[in-house]
Amino acid sequence: MDILVTPKHGHRGTLKLFGETHECALGRAGVSPDKREGDGATPAGRFALREIRYRADRLSLPGTLLPATPIGKDDGWCDDPADPAYNRPVPLPYGASAENMWRDDGLYDLLVILGHNDAPPVAGLGSAIFLHCASPGLGETEGCVALPRDRLLALAPRLTPDMMIDIRAR
Image (cartoon, rainbow, N blue to C red):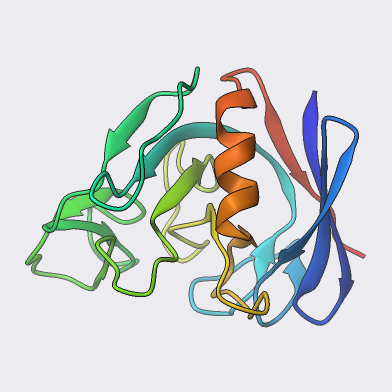
């Protein structure tokens, strides 16, 4: 069973799974079949669900079949296409550009790492593509898919390693 993500308008879309339809947020540039680092687009394609990361200080993760790792204060994700660790987790501080995974805004309280541009990463084709918690009002993302925290928390125990997320372009 796949998770189906379909854009509607602007940065809004729908996510369908288990016969349920949920409103979701997408990248500020919508969905693109030609994802590039920093373009603000959510990549179109079918991607594996690699693992869950979560803030253990903010929530108790229900049982899940996906590998799950708590996020630490020094966890980062390299988004520098020129760095050998591009699109990989790194410890902070890091010598190249890296996103801080320990966020104050709650967006990464729970996230699923998607298998976009990771086998192996190709410089410049996009990094840090996650299914994560949405900002209030389903605000735009930098290129991820986002759901309200309570919905993502309810779906997490039902996700399995054989699932794929299918993000459609218009």
